[in-house]
Image (cartoon, rainbow, N blue to C red):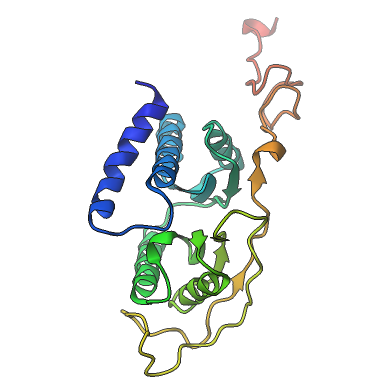
Length: 261
């Protein structure tokens, strides 16, 4: 069985529970299945390529053929390799590489998990938001939103909810409205807390911070397939530690002859 077929089967199994539970997004089952299988295949390839677990903390989310990579790796080469592996999957049109170079930190990871749960709770608790349309990734207090909103107002409201969770440093939105169209909109960096006594106020497990976190566009635009350049492809500038040229792709520097001959 090929990697793609295996990924698609795993995606079906992973999607079965929420679908049976009625947690349906606005996208078709086929679209959701294709995205889930692409995410599973990318993650499987990362784990297969990750010697000593170097890609264990890379998170993968795919919505509408758009891939968001987040989390951490140890080196810049690993960061580039993660993106390269994502592009190996044919059903991918765009990749946003938000992976950072960092070290493992249990306290940070626990805090990010708590923030993720708080955001999901707020989205689900708001009748004006269809929570199933949004994917939430958090790393070191930075929130990445991915999904397909039904309107600009829903997109803005979801980002504002994320900004009101304690511990959030900033919110970056890759959410598209209805259909994919250009880069994510720049959302206002100032939001107002919800009015007291609102009938549609979301469930909250912790008080909102006094000052909402800023909502900002991504530092770099996502790479589209037509613009992507493999950093290890033949003819490109060789990375550190490689030979004098890169005619056949990434090559390790050869060891000197025995005896210095």
